[in-house]
Length: 179
Image (tube, rainbow, N blue to C red; front, side, top):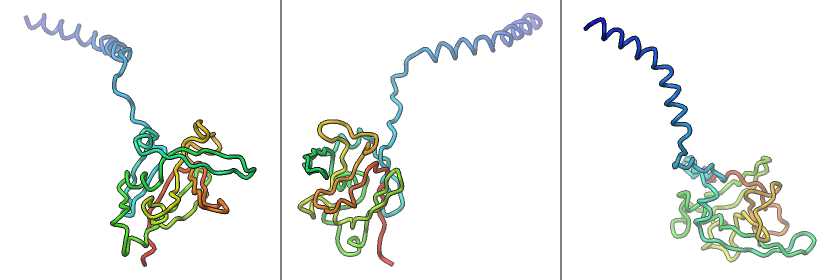
């Protein structure tokens, strides 16, 4: 009997690589039901330095708004998206009632793909504190933003000149001016 079991062991060892190849091939042909996680379109870094990835589907779950503005040629443009304050809140940045005292020293640096950066006091981005909230747009005139503008663009409708309108927004970093 010992001879038979050692022969069987040899046969199993000889089949193992072939069996492994078969199993890998069979498993790779089975469609996966688990969707891969969506990449973050925007990163929000809160005042504690913690990064929060925000995907396009995350943005789609927030309340949507449309802002109509005239471009440089006077042609109306209809930007659609969500208020940047709502995006910040969804990433854990406290706005509204908690935004008082030393928290009024917080500011946001909005960063673009081309390293263009602008600064807003955090209170300026709180929709409850302004008559003209700042929009994080993902659509213009019913279409997704062009590659040159998007996928995300900051639209500050009350701004003239439009120096703090940011194309290709990638990151918002919250910091404190408190020394």
